[in-house]
Image 1 (cartoon, rainbow, N blue to C red):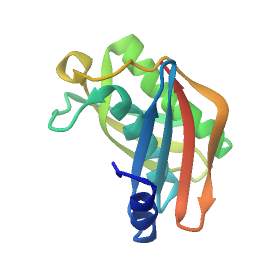
Image 2: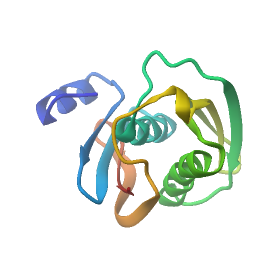
Image 3: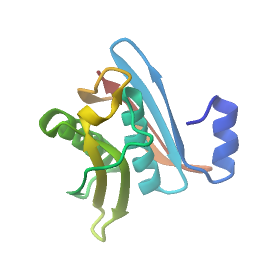
Image 4: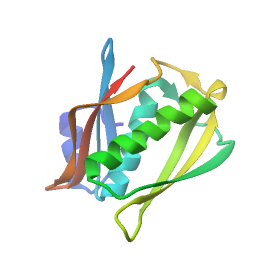
Length: 152
């Protein structure tokens, strides 16, 4: 995670990936960036997890795969973050690592290394959903970036 905006700009100019979040009472604002769309989406997942859980050093207990149907980049971002919320609520699992690969038809193959929620340190409110308000993803001068508001 990057400390301030100057650090973020410097890192992005060097082609690095990353994320930052700003917690709030009823939600968290998440920003992620990477040289590629898939990298940016992966950073968004890690950023969302970082809003509520400390997963460094946690070993995954399973690998889960999901295929996201083709759609606009905004739709893919929301669908991906919704998959994380689904795993939290239904299975009690949290991603500790994620890899994405674009499919030929414009969708995404997602591989999530997950751990049991009981095995991670909870440091904030667990997300309940993703807001369409303020949602953005797209290319910029340094690669790709996205912004999302996570409802907690």
